[in-house]
Image (cartoon, rainbow, N blue to C red; front, side, top):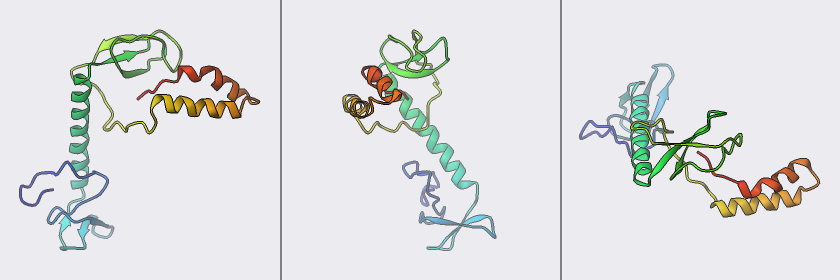
Length: 158
């Protein structure tokens, strides 16, 4: 919480608990069931971190939905297995999970989205090359042969 304005600072990760008085990191006091600041001695209510985490999550979801709409994303659903994921443009092709034909829908006004989308560490072509390399080293195994045949269909899904 910002000491001057009394507002939650949503730029701070919800994974750390901050003192509501000075903003320094607070430690949980097991005996008193609250967070205690070793810097200023302030006490932060045990509910404060949860309120901060909920507000942070809501903000992240709102930003993600705004970015997806701006990029022209749509919702892709599988009629067979029920998988749903966000994709760009019209749904085309097959479900990466069960192989059924996908259905495309407009992104709902209030989509159910994860709190945070972590960017992929590899570009699709790099991931495909790594997968093919692994499969090539494991062609004597059943899994290696199956992966080798399916590597071209590699799809990144959230």
